[in-house]
Length: 377
Ligand SMILES: Nc1ccn([C@@H]2O[C@H](COP(=O)(O)OP(=O)(O)OP(=O)(O)O)[C@@H](O)[C@H]2O)c(=O)n1
Ligand SMILES: C[C@](O)(CO)[C@H](O)COP(=O)(O)O
Image (cartoon, rainbow, N blue to C red; front, side, top):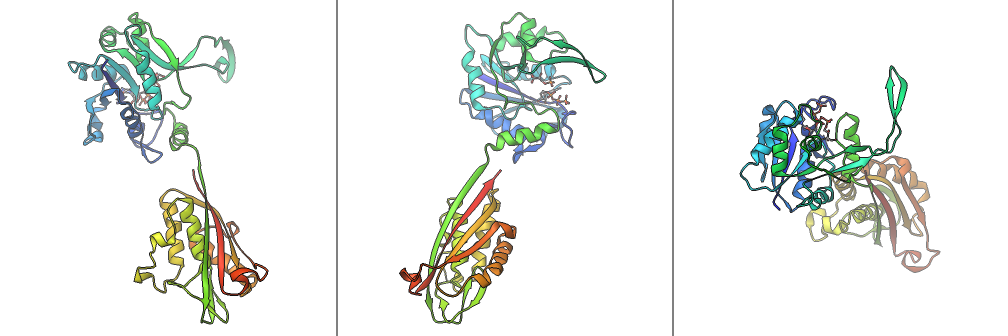
C-alpha cells in the first residue's frame, strides 16, 4: 500500500469570518493549516501530501518542505478532483482526503483510517453517531421530529482506493457534500470508523476557541519550591524582599544577599524545571557582584511569561529571630507584587522564628522558603 493525502484548503471560509480564509488564520500559536499538516506529517505511512489552495493563495505555502501545492476550484468536489489529478502517475494506491479546516485531527485518527483500508475495504471514514434528538423547525418553532437511529456526523480524513475514488469523481453528480457521497454514488461501499469529538471542522467564529482549547491540551499547573540561607556579617541593614530593613548586622552574599527574593526566584525557576538562580546568574560572574536581587526575580518571572505561564500566587516564609519582619511585611508584599507584576493579594510574605533553635535561632543568619504556582492555559 502506498498512501497519499489530499488536504483541501481552497475554500473562502465565509462562515468563519476574519480577514483571511480560516485555514490561514492562527489558532493556538500556529496557522490552522500548519496544525493540519503537522498531524499528517506525524503519520509515517503517509508518503505524499498534496495541498489544494485557492489560486490567490498559492504563495501561502511557498517554502513548505515535502508537499505538493496545486490550485483549487469553485467547489470542494472540484478541489478534490484537482488534488487527485496532481497524484496521477505518482504510484499512490490509496488516498486520504481531508479538510484543512479540521486542524485538530490526531495522527491516531489518520492511522486508523489507513489501517482500515485494504483489499476488502476500498473506502473508510470516521463519523460520530448523532446523540441529540433531531427536530425540523421553521420560523422559530419545532415543526417535526426526525428519527436519529442510524444517523452519523461525517468527518475526515476519508480514505479510498485511489483509482476507485478518481473514477467515482469523474462521473460524480454535482453538489456532493463529501467524498463518501461521491463514492457511494459510484457503488463503492464505505466502512464507518469511530470519529472523535475533537476532530471538529472550523466552520463558524466560535470554532476557533474550541480548536484552541483542544490544540493547547489540558491546563498545565506547576508548583515550585525555593529555599535559601544567607549568613549575617557586618552592616546596618538587611535587604529582604526588596526592602531595606534597618538592623545591627547585614547579610553576606555575592549580590545584595536578599534571601527573600532569591528564594522566590528559585521557586519560579523550580516550577519550570529551570534549575535555580545560580544557573541563570552564576556567582562566578563578576557582573552580579553587589547586584540588586530584583533583577533575578524579574528574570524568573519574565521567563515564565515567555513560556506562556501565569504566576497565580507566591507564598514566602522568612525564618529568623531578628529583625522583626511583621512591621515590614506589607512593604515587602507590595515590592514583590511590583517586581513580578502579580496582584498584592496573590503575594504572601510571612515570618517565623525557630524558637532559638538551630542557626537561625542562634542568630547566625536568615533562611527563607517559598512556594510558587504557575499556570499555562
Ligand atoms: N471550493 C472549495 C471549497 C472548500 N474547500 C475546502 O473544503 C474544506 C471544507 O469546506 P468548508 O468548511 O465548507 O470551507 P469553506 O468553503 O472555506 O467555508 P465556507 O462555506 O464558510 O466559505 C475546507 O478545508 C475548505 O478549504 C476547498 O478546498 N475548495
Ligand atoms: C467533508 C465534511 O467535512 C464532512 O463533514 C463536510 O461535509 C465539508 O464541509 P461543508 O461545511 O459541508 O462544506
